[in-house]
Image 1: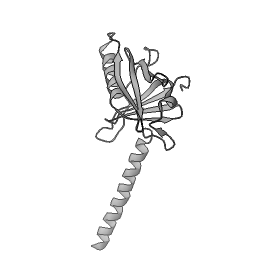
Image 2 (image 1 turned 30 degrees about the vertical axis):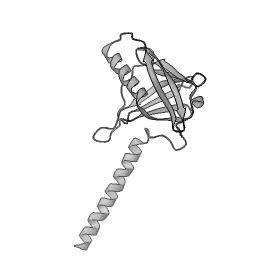
Image 3 (image 1 turned 30 degrees about the horizontal axis):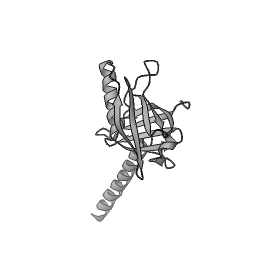
Image 4 (image 1 turned 90 degrees about the vertical axis):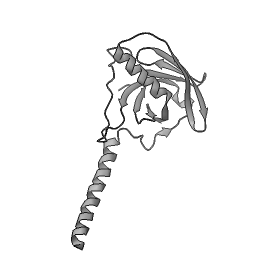
Length: 168
């Protein structure tokens, strides 16, 4: 009986270890790299950042799925421009232009008082814009890794931006 228990425990430990390894490998493309800078100062974000990928929160199976984004040929892409001199951020949110204020403290940057124009677009573009502005207003943290910027939402959505001029 002791041999059966040990065999069962040994299999369970191997399966659990593989499960954790699989989850870590599966999520590695979403998690910030080790050398990334969490909550960088606004001066390090100056310039334009273009939305490259939007990863939705993991589903019940733990799978991270990309949110479909319009291609650059469809229309203007979602972009953010940080200006540390004026403590502001502005950009294109999918349908309209937006602007907001930046405040900084020891915890990092906060984006506040978001305002946007009110041009009508197709329903799917309006929904994308609404979701983007929600993420911008309610993100949990910003992480910079060289020419990549991750906006990580409280709802586990991850928006990955690439610095303009360094598009791949």
